[in-house]
Image (cartoon, rainbow, N blue to C red; front, top):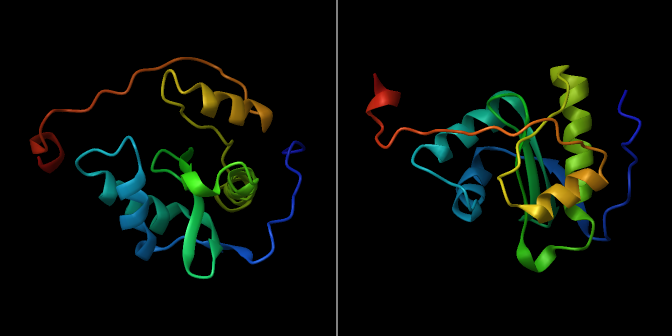
Length: 145
């Protein structure tokens, strides 16, 4: 089913581990598309659906999670760690975890115009199916009703 997934090795000194609540603040702070409430959504996603990160010691270098809509989400690698295969490894292992643990067809959303992400995910075997628009309310009152 996921024949495009092949495991590459991580660089020496880098390990793959599960994300937990303690990583949410860093991930949200660095997430370029964060919004009011995104930290809570990320915490719920990690707690309920899981996520993986590449670590050097206790330092989180690259991460991905199974988002609240059961798609691959919040994929990011620290700028100084890019182009070393960390993001690819984390995405491959996170999609494997999602398929095995959550039993969902793996999909994701890419922000319009993010050509770097589109190239990255195409290289991993993903294909664009459609274009959509996400709309968020201007205030939290809609969330708290």
